[in-house]
Image: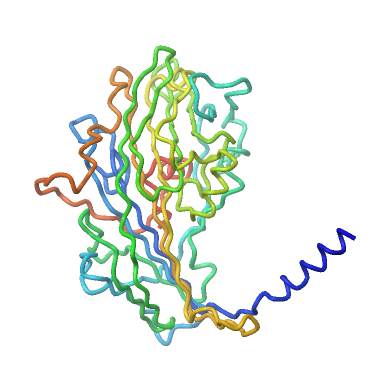
Length: 406
């Protein structure tokens, strides 16, 4: 009888789901605050800038816009995003339709040499069973090593050229870029010849920047600590490094480590995630809780990556989403959705763990409060149009905080 009662309750709940149509158009915004090394080179790690006096208070903002529609354009595709004045992007930015673009998880490139040693989890020492070793000499060119990247969390770019009849994106080669002082709150409107007009008001601004401190431990491990960021839903740390081959002319073993306790790498973890996704990842210990402020890189990771180590820390952030028209009050009425829109946030910082300079991190933690003091003029780095790098190097660059997904 208990089974029958459960079934009787479940059937009406399913039947009450209102029918929907659409949406005709989908709009996706991704906002990022980038600090540390990645902020010194247009969003790409720049080790030389770091070693030649770059400060940890370098901060940039990034914004990526994507519009997909099931409608055909009436003429050459055209669409614009009209911004509030605080965005400092002029009256609008043009959403450009590319001729082609790679799929989010497309992997291309030449076969790397040597081996990859994979570690995961926070702690003084790596547990038994680590590292997992991948020998690239046994793989075909361009093949992704099984188990290297996360298979459970896919990249979600929203609209793409492949899943939309009409499509546009920004940034583009228009000379416009988001500035450090740019602000997002206020009215936003998207209009074009292949989409219904989209209009919404954002309440949230870019996330606060992250700052990391590193401290070598007597065991050989490295303590990575940070100040918490408001609105963070969880944190993930990643480190990539290696050591030279015995002859010194080529790289020997490469090493990857992540703070994930469940050995999750790459995939959607290097991109933007919704709060709902992150909540589940915190529960299964893939992502550190929003209350976390430190993680220890095991001594074995630093031992096996003796010559260079680069790390990144990502704070996943909030999301705002919108739909028009609103859901009907009548649960039986069909919801004819014209458009949906969302914006996801994250904050990312990166650093170098240089042998002999282990307690550097990404410098001045107090300087990361952009509202606490006035700063002198600072040259703005232009946000680059979408030209994803190919191969393993491009994927690792994304994992280190320089990958936009575009």
